[in-house]
Each structure stands twice: as C-alpha cells, then as structure tokens.
Image 1: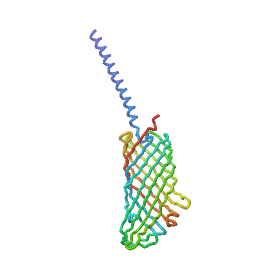
Image 2 (image 1 turned 90 degrees about the vertical axis):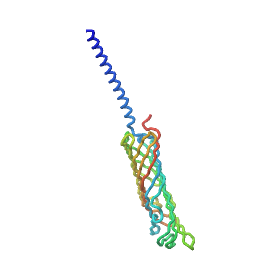
Image 3 (image 1 turned 45 degrees about the vertical axis):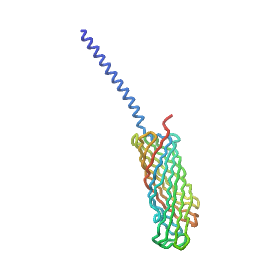
Image 4 (image 1 turned 180 degrees about the vertical axis):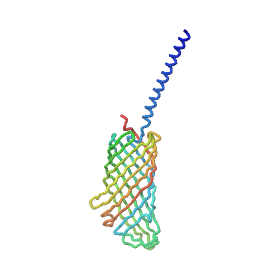
Length: 289
C-alpha cells in the first residue's frame, strides 16, 4: 500500500513536470512567434527616409535635327556612359511620401570625320577633326499618395515637377582655317510630372519596386514633346539600415525646342536606358510611435 502510494505520488509529480515543460515550451514558442512576426517585416516598406545611390551605366541614343539637317551624336560620341544616380523617398506619413531622383550624363568626344559635314552653314571636309558634346541632367521630385498600404505592399501615384537640362555643342578643326564651333542649345525646362509607383515585399529581406512617369505637354512656344521616365529594381536588405540593389532605368524624349541658340527650331530625340547598381541607406520607421 505504501509502495503504491509512493508510485501514485511519483506519477502525479511526473505529470506535473510534463505539464510545466509543455507550458514552458508553449511560452517559448509564443515568444518566438512574436519575434518571427516582427522580423518578417521587410524594412524597405517601413523606412521613414531612404536614399539609394550608385553607378548608372546607360546605353545612349541621341539625335538632333537643326534647320532640317539631322545630326546623329553617336557618330562621334560614345553610346555608353558611366555616371552616378540618386533615388530616394521620405515617407511623411503612412500614406503620404515624397519621391525624388537625379542623374546626369555628360559626354565630350573628338573624332576624325569620314564624310563631309555641315556645321552652322559651314561645310566641313572629310578628314577634319570634329568634336561634339551632349550634356543631359534630369532631376525630379513628386508628392505621392499610397492607395494601397500594408506591411508587404505599397501602391500609389505622385505628382510633381522635373527639371530637364540639355546642352549640346559641335565644332570642327579644319587645317588652314579657324576652328568652327556651334552651340545647338543650352536650356533648362521645368516639366510637370505624374507617375505610378509600387513597392512589394517578396520576403523579409527581398523586395521589388518600380515607378513610371510620363508627360506629353507644350510649354508656351519653347517646348513641345513627350518625356517618359521609369525605373524597376530588386533589392536585398540584409541589415536594417543598409541594403543592396540592382535597378534598370529608362528615360526617353521626343521634343521640339524653339528659339534656342542660333536656330529658330530644332527637334531632339534621346534615349537613356541601362542598369543601376546601388546602395540603400534607410533611417527611421513609419510604424513606430
């Protein structure tokens, strides 16, 4: 009887121990679940402020028609350029954000002309040294509103302004004659923009984002044309404040510029598109109180 009593107490003690162990395991699992839930958030969608900067390597195609004479800049200039670019955002609130970006590509080359050219009404014989520059910069800022906003998705639209700066010069060195130079244009244009953007978390560390903006407008008698600007990227965020990404940027235009340089009117076409390898720095948190 006494032995059976001890056996019963041991069984109760054993059951109590098992219950305690199960309770501890359940508590531990709950803590881990909460921790996993927190760590499942992709920081890219929670940054209060984020800036992405890196090296942009676009393929370039530019052409200008001056007084019905077309000039292809890639006959002299390199059709690629290595330059810098910056993209960023500031989430003012959970749904309102400020998007901004900037890039510039300056090219300057001199080559021997294989055919007869005409610059500013002067005939340039074959074999002359012909030089050309084509400088472009594009800066934009827009106020966006996110129609869809969650821990994994951000979809919205923005409106803002872009500053487009264009400068082009051509020149030639002819043996026995003074050098000839011609400034085709050197102008800046503030342009209204409208765009759509999307950021989507694929996992706690991987995300994709993109934006496309377009405008087709006429600014008085000075500018008439269409400009398209777009970016798509995939980003890896191994740390809370630092990430790495690879993007593809595209910018193209078909515009008519009036009253520029010595010409009454000229048509400009360009296309810049290529990869951007960048570093992300993120600060703050939208979800924190």
